[in-house]
Amino acid sequence: MAIEFHCTQCGQMLRVADSSAGKGARCPGCKTVMVVPAAGDLASRSLPPLNQPAISQPVAPAAPPPAPQQPAAPGQDDLFAYLKQAVTPNAPPPAAYQQPGAYQQPAAAPFADKPANPFGDQAAASANPYASPAPVAYSAYPSQPGELGLPWETKPPGLGVWWETSQMCLSDAESAFRRMRQYGGIGSPMLYAVFGLLLGFVGQTAWSLPAMMFEAFAGPAANPAGGQVAGMEVMVQLLLNGLITVVWATGGLLISAGVTHLCLMLVGGAHQGYETTYRVTAFTAGSIAWLSVVPCFGPLIALVMTLICQIQGLAQAHETTAGRAAAAVLLPVAFCLVVVVAGFIAAVAVIANL
Image 1 (spheres, helix red, strand yellow):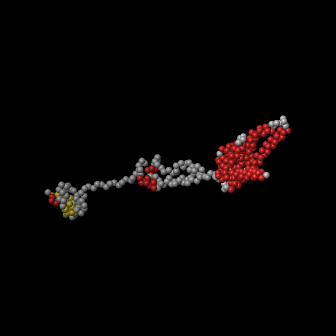
Image 2 (spheres, helix red, strand yellow):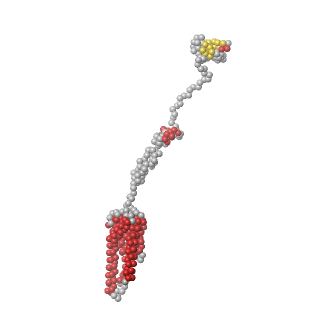
Image 3 (cartoon, rainbow, N blue to C red):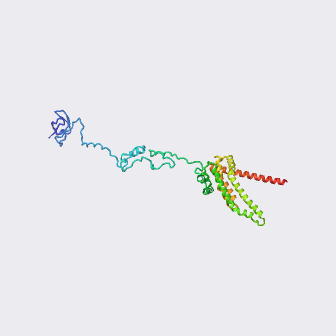
């Protein structure tokens, strides 16, 4: 039985013996060499020529080209987009996160509507969220003590203002003299000192006057002229004490402040002028003098409080240490004690030699 098949080039019908299955055959028309199919194959099957590779299995169709990648959904993570955002902080976020309701890179730092500096202008916010915070320029506070001023310096003079200033100096001398104005003239402090010393004099006279009156008018019936003389002596003594108080409140405090300022210069604590020292001395004297109203121990209490208050006041007003302020206050006291003791010893020696 013969095998019939068509030429793959010219289509001519070819016929070969069964024994030629799988062998090569040449078309007599176009001279193309091809493989003879097996006997069971269709006679009309077109076979490829021997000079072309035979395809034993059907080739699957090529895969379609990949569709353009769609942006990731807002709920999915884009690793490379996040890496790009971390490396370049100013780069815009991925397109998937620019949809309404999704994450948006903030245009300004949090709390940009609030001033970054409570004492000055708001610092400019950086566009880079990873940048270091911008330095903030703070406005300096007044460095001079007493910038606000004591009540006597800021309000009209009066009994209530004097009492308020005195209570401030007695309760917290450091804060009071820190508020005191270092400069501003000596008229206002002098008036305050006169006011306070006169009030102390009046109070001291109030509790000592009964004893003075009893001494003056104890025996007027026995000696009426003597009683009148005693009464005149009491009045003269009162006027003299009042005059001494006024003189001390004016000229005496000027001299005392000068001596204190000189001692403060010697110990290296005078960082301000004489006017500052006088203001401390005057406000101290005007605030403490009324303590002499206390019977018996009033003058001693007033002396101790004056030393303490003046030391704290000088330390704050001159911006120096308490040790130097104490040395400036106590040096004149020590000098006076030395002079008194030396005078007493000299007097005793003179009396002994008589």
